Structure formats: C-alpha cells, structure tokens
Length: 355
Image (cartoon, rainbow, N blue to C red):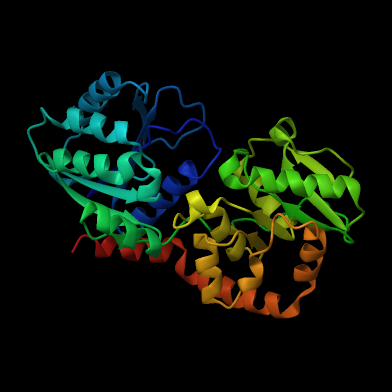
C-alpha cells in the first residue's frame, strides 16, 4: 500500500505541515507502507526524495485540477494507493474531484479535518457537497485529531470520524539557548503572528513589561513588532522562520509557552504546539473555552487558563510558575501525552482504519 500526501499549501517551514507529513511517513514505514507527497512547484524548502513538486497555483481551480489529473495519471497502482489530505481548503477538494473525473479506477481518499464547521464556508455544507462529488470517484475515510471536532463534524458531514493522535509532538533534541537563570522565559511560538493566535494579548503583555519590572523575558518573532508588540529590555525578538532544530531549542529553553488562542477558532481545533509543549514538560498558559482547556481539565490543570486581559497578568505568571502542585500535575499530563501523541500510537490508529 502506498500513501500519497497532497500538500497544496506547503511553501515554507512555518506551521506544522512539513513536520506532520514527515511523521506520517515514519508511521507508515513502521507498517511497511511507502509514502510520497505532492507539493506546489513554488515550494522552497528541502524535501525528501520521494516528494514531488507537481501542484500549481492552489487558488486557481483549473490549473490545479489539471495538475491533479496529470499527477494521478502517473500513479502505477491506483487501487493500492491512498490519497491523504490533512491541510486543505474547499477549492482543493473540487480541484481533486476534477482531477479524478476522467480516471479509470476508483480511488481511496483519507481526509483529516482540523477545523470546526463554524470556520468553514456555509458551516461545512459546501464541504459536504464536495464529498458527495468525490464519492462518485473514490471511497472516503474521515479522520480528525480532536474529540470535540469529531462530534461537531459528524453532525454536519453525517459521517463517523476516527480520532488520531498528533504525531509530531515528541522532542528530538535537548539542546538549549543560553539564558539568565533568574528570569522566567515566556515564549509565544511560531512566525505566524496573527490575531487568532492571540496577538492582542501578547501586545498587552509587552506593554506591561515595558512599564513594570518583572522577572520575565518575553520571546516573540521579529514580525510581531510591526503588529504592536512593544520593544523593551524584557522582550527578545527572534527569527520569524525557524529551522526545526532552532524551534526545538527555543521550546527547550522556554519555561512557559504562551498560547492565548482565540476560542472562536480554537474552541474545538487542536494545537500541535500545545502537544509539543506538554510533551517537553513545558508549562503552557492558555485561553478559556478552547480545546486546550478541555485537555487541561482532564488532568486537573484549570490553572493553565489565565485572564489574559488582567492588569495583574505578570503576577499571575509568576504565581503559576512557582506552583508546585501545577508542576506535579503537568508531569502526569506529560507522561500521558508522550505515550499517546507519538509515532507508534499514530501508526496503530492508522492501521486500524484499514479494517
């Protein structure tokens, strides 16, 4: 069996796309399955030898439909191949359908949903329509990485979804950057400094650090300064796009990971960074009414949800960092995450989908 990942949005190392499909490749290899990926021709990062630049402009339906058709024609054994989509939009589904229309064989497509129907056009009704078209040419299997999403999507798609672990959360290095031991290093990860990731709360935090003394060092991407983050001796600006090694080194260096994600977007959607932080034993501070809060409550860690708009947020951060009971519960959560959100468990769940 061969899996083919379709990655129409892969352009750089920012985000989870590359790491996710490298983890997928490793999980499949454990079962003796081969893996390749189709990425845009404009992709500028180093790729595994089995990955090919076959996709065109992802915003143009005709161009990408033709690219899909030509790529599908090259597959030697379609009946023993699975097309795997994990980061896709509505236009990608219709492009894939038109690429399949003139194919002779029936295909298998696995689709991993990451976002709530509330974030989709027409609350998922157009996706449901796209799947009706795709079923004319393919057998569909639906996956998600969130129990909350599985419930929401099932009511819209009228389709059972299998919940899979998040496989790219395990640390691969213990290297760290130099740091001052008397400071609490608080990192807002990622180069995509957008509002849904809690930009306004990080700006608020930077303003307080500029006005008040606190044993806190805020670590943020350079591009956040142009979006309202205030520069001060308490703020450290790092590169927007980090190599995987540099990313993991900052995860290891940080004491606290700041994840004030918007509940409207992340009420049911997962955060790979949250999984990485827990697996690394780092204390994440999160927003109420998010998937992260849902997970934290399982381990009695309600304290991880803080008031991001409070004028006393600096004091809150100090107090939670010093809370021994929180660190004890975090250790329990770390052990569970390391055993569940891993390549082995991911491989097991994918294998179960074949039966």
